[in-house]
Image (cartoon, rainbow, N blue to C red; front, side, top):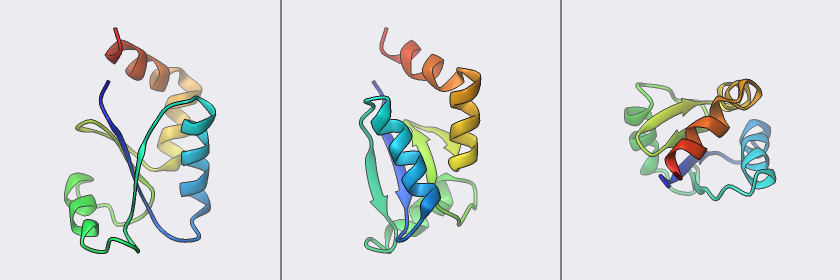
Length: 88
């Protein structure tokens, strides 16, 4: 399975919501807090096509987007389809 990476920041309710969604689904993820690892901010901006807000969520080389994008994918079933297709 590809790795899920979430770029986050301090006191970010949207970041917490995104992490909770993955935790509730028992899906492991790597968190990179750009306030603690400031050098990673440039990576996030480049990988996301210029987005500077957090969270920015990636599944392997697929840019899921932010919290709203993640929840929309989950509501439509696309998130489970993406992850489950990768584990087969």
